[in-house]
Length: 345
Image (cartoon, rainbow, N blue to C red):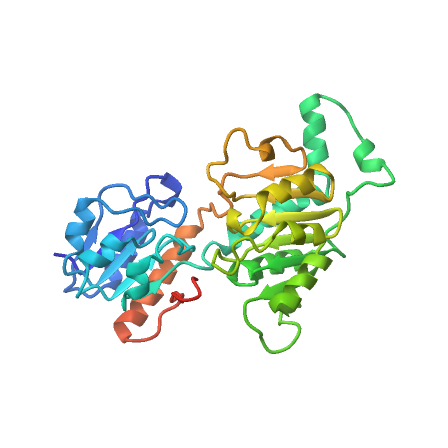
């Protein structure tokens, strides 16, 4: 019987917890407690949440704490009566917020913000890909042609990030990391927040917007619109066909959140007819993206296979979060990243 169950040996090597992190976590729990480290691979794809193997469920009987990729109902069921805190190493909680979790009083934390730096760098790379015309260069290289026309024409879309208006739909931890980077390059940044904050501009110079009026302005003024909001009942389909058409002609759309926030069919149409200059997409309505999907063949689309968060720096930040929350848990304090089960993040 274990006190703490660690189920973070992902089947994907980059996401499996390293030995040094296991050692630091083991050293942070009380000496009288037993730590069970799952031997089999976990599936952390998406938001995680797949049912753990019998070995993990057996270890959970009598356990106080569970660390995994997502928290399926089976974890709560087996840990009923003793489990006091569950933590997901994923940022999204969609797969975890099932009926059992919504009804449970077990403390639930996630890894929101831990993926911020690499995702923000991916967004910056996608923006530069289109802003500096690298899509034209890649296409010409594939053809084996020296083609300067897209760069030198009077109507060239090649420009600088400085002076652009970049809108962030979902100005949370990831949105702030994005804003720091594009703001440093001279962009004017608009950030749509879920709740009103004091002042119109925050400490890093981001103009804060709120509510439907804020969303309408964000869409209407963004020369590059970055989707970074969590998927909830309120955000599902937020970029409808009508809103996509309200984005300024020639603008860029970047999505590093979830595919379900964007009307994918309307996005394809806007890319095909030139209403949008381009799109950088890390997430899709269906994953993996079907082989016959039109997004594969559009020249003004840059696709990554839901890998924007990949970074060797993840486990340092994730371990620091776990260690700080362990300290707080043992001290009876509030935890970082406690999930709002009503709002869904």
